[in-house]
Length: 181
Length: 363
Image 1 (tube, chains in turn green, blue):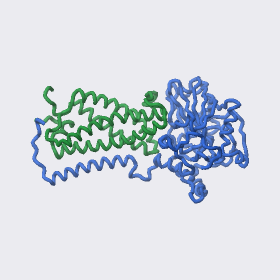
Image 2: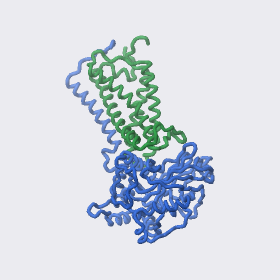
Image 3: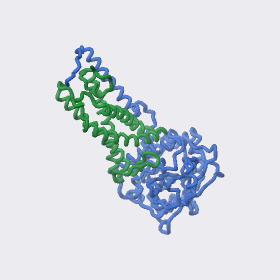
Image 4: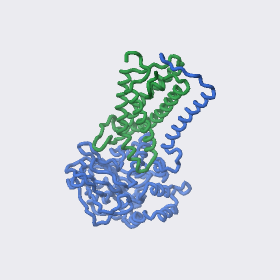
């Protein structure tokens, strides 16, 4: 483990894929619940809130692991612009994953809603009850969701580009597979 | 990278094919997201469509609740007598006094509507227990609701659309709605026969939807509840009411409160097996067990423009532990639509008059 790693650690890969499933589910639940009057609405809302907190905890854990364990380097021959793009998009992903649960929590606080996670378990408000603030946070939550989804698509496209076109080992650093001899 | 794998170069055709594959993955993902958001289902009944339909009934909805738009705030308290604790573990039903932030309204989409246009009067309450658990409820003075499903509510709302040519809804549309929705009949009979009064104080306010109380043993009880007035009914012929001006309800409330607080008894009705849990158009038989669980005291009223109820969404699914929704499809729909209405009006602060509209002003 002293030489520079070529792949993310199993813990990092585990966190990545667990969060991938949860975040994508979260985005679909979110867009689905705000556009339906069907009884499933309340079920979706009841999943959305605790899941958001789970994601917040996971992103904090992930950030800590990332700072401690680092990451494999990008290929040397990667054009500078793609290098920059990779860094910027990952920063944006981390920022959005961190901001989105907080925006949701703050938005409910500003709307004067009790922030119910499950049954009697409630979170304290993290913003004052204020309609103007609610409006800003509510819109922010929506736009960050769209931006997050777009960034995830970009991330997916880049990963596939690395894996299928460049075939430079970048995709391999995050997927689980047998070690290359 | 130290161990760059050896790769055979791709032909231009292979590159094109793989790029197309990547594009297809993105397109399918994006389409899936759009599908979840209802982009491909224009017929889907969304909160936005309901709320838009409510706003199409005349008046300027910007900055306001899209339904029951005209109203006043009140503050008071709820004194639970402890009887409700036999049926529900809700903290607000344990013996004690709990603060209430409430609102009286009339069922109109027009903030400046004359009170005479509000056949249905409403009371909304938020009761907060010391542990922070909240009970929010939006209740109407009709004994039953006009419709049983969100779809029927949408159709009823559409039938009330104001025709721009006449400035009024098409009377034929509502007649057609009544004819095609037999569940509307009990509400219509109430609306036709119940005496009009110039007051919010003499009305009962009913949960309409059924809920479930969960007791300490974990048993579930299907219930509806009603705030029963303690002042005598003050019937006034409609022709006389019209002479009282556009804001007689607020005037009456203020006047009564100068003489002292107003009270309602909160009565919980326990369903018998077979009573409908999912149809708010059907009353339960009157011989069911009724339990008085406490008394609501209204001490003060405040104009909504800057009142304590303004920034509250009286979502009836905000319930304390010990009370749950039933399978009534109106409850999730109310929650979804109220949230949309709340999101809209809080974002329309620029249009929200922070002062009370001028007496008798017209839209």
